[in-house]
Image (cartoon, rainbow over all chains, first blue to last red; front, side, top):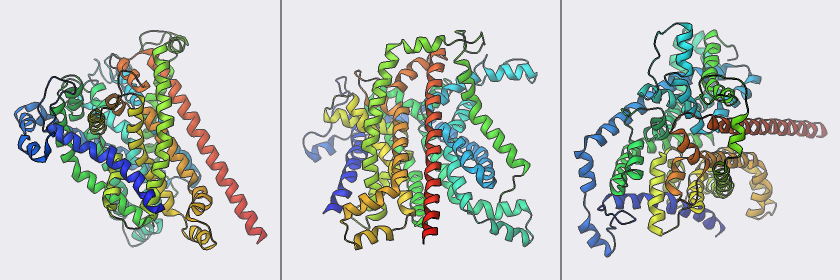
Length: 291
Length: 272
């Protein structure tokens, strides 16, 4: 009895406020826009059959007709993918060095990685505006040491978006990889080296495969949220930076076209279902391996 | 595994420079006398004064604080329950769906969560304001709490609970007297995580709040969109300072607790 209550309370909370809202989004993506508030005509009033007969895929057809949406999905995927790879390239060496550091340093190093994560996301993105702008600190510095003659345009380009994503999501990459490397049995690497592997070969053949779960978790933790990112492309990206999170936000708040915004969300969700399921499996497996 | 190669040292150094220099610049330039944020014109605390006399910021800070305290507290209770169910609950109908609903919000893009909750609230006819932001924040942060707590639940010795049950404790007493004290550090860090996530959230709050409630991130966003401003630098410095003090205090407290536990163990070993 008590167990049933224990299960039911969080279960119904999540059903009501996580799963059912998706059904609402799905329903509205199939309705017509109207100028009343709420700006859509509900399509489910008189029973399921009338509702089904009134369903129309107009909004989805609209999405395929306008180039903007198609391009936004492709460019979001591209930006998220490139930034995930860049974050891995920056994060792995850091996690590796942390796992090799003397035992008494590790808590401090770990805290230094976690600290930025506790600091406001918005502020960390905002910090880069002053660094990357035309007369910003990076350009001042590069001009001063004489590498460049004229300021570089970085702010309001995709490069600024990559920098922003790598910067803000770095802790999410480092932490799972570090925890995988930390558990790794050092004698396995010694064994590989004793058996004639060079250090680099031992790294590729032993360390990387054994930290695979950490790499997978880290990549999903960066890739999935980055795909729908709104703050970073809006602040650091330019008018040429198309990302679906930004399109959705503007469709909703500027154009006030709720059915189209919902259709955009439904498609984004469909794209994300596979990575989300894979991520959940990976996490579940690690929890079960731990026990 | 304890010898750092030059490559390790370089990657750590560059990595931390990358992580900390942007924030350091923000902090230094919050004390700049000039309105131009990239030109140093002498030390001044002028922007802090202007910030503290700005009622709109103070109101927004108050709304944010209320939302964060309420939502993280509810999220901690719900998240701990969910973790307990996932780790100790055994099999029940819809367990896969349940665990999916715990893990999916961790990575779900905020625009989708925000949009879907807003459409639900409108469908229900709820007035958008502090209540709706609290409901939204509770929902995603309870999942973070549940992940933190369940990792602690997985790693601790279950026989302690069973011993309490065998000795006649009710399941609730076993939880209250044995399990809860052991998982307390995870519950506390879960609360802190939920609290920070709520303080930090812009996108979901923008969707779920109405004209009556503006949170601090929403206020920051509307002025940041117009470019860099020294007032925001001052506000950022205050927030960074608070977080730094909080995190260092928490880590010192947990170090202290670990040392005490070790001393107790040694004392117990000597006595035995």
